[in-house]
Amino acid sequence: MVWDVCSWLDMGSLIRLETTLSGGRYLIILPGHLHSFMSIVHSDGLGQFHQDNAAPHASRVATKWLQEHSSDFRHFQWPPKSTEMNIIEDIRDALLHVVYNRSPPPRTSMDLWTVMKDEWCELPPRYLQTLVESMPHRVEALLCVRGGPTRY
Image (cartoon, rainbow, N blue to C red; front, top):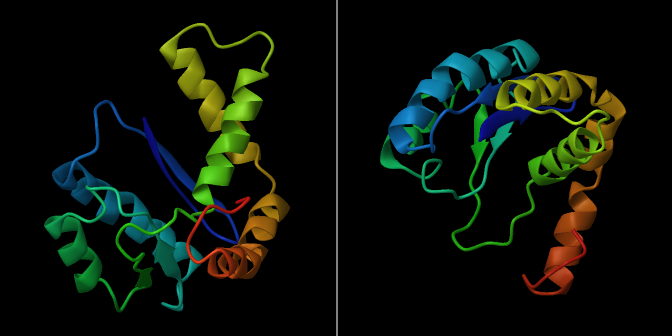
C-alpha cells in the first residue's frame, strides 16, 4: 500500500506503507510529508488539500491535526458517502498501467517499489494539470446525474 500527494506544480512523496493505514499511522504522515510538501509547493498558504473519506483520513486525530494546520493550507471536506472524484485515483491508475506494462516486470516487492517510485517521478506535470483542469467538468457531470455514476 502507498500514500501519495501531488499538486498542479509537482509530484510529492510516494510513501510505502508496510501495513494498513490507521488514524495513528496517518498522523505520522501528515506532519512529515503532507505539511512539508504543502509548505514548499504552496508557501503562500493558499494550497488546498483534498482527500477522500477513508477511515484514517476522517479519524479524530487526523481531523484535529488538519484543523490545527488550517492556517498553512485549506482542507477540502468531502461530504459523507459522496461519490469519489479525487484525481489521485486517475494518477494511481496511470502509474499502475505503466508498472504492469513494464518489461521485464518487477519480480520482487522491492523491485515493484523501485519501479513505482521511478515511474511516479516520471509522470509529466501536464498530466497533473489536465486532471486538475478536469475538475469543473467532473463536478458538472456529477451534478447532472444527481450524485450518480459518471464517466469519471
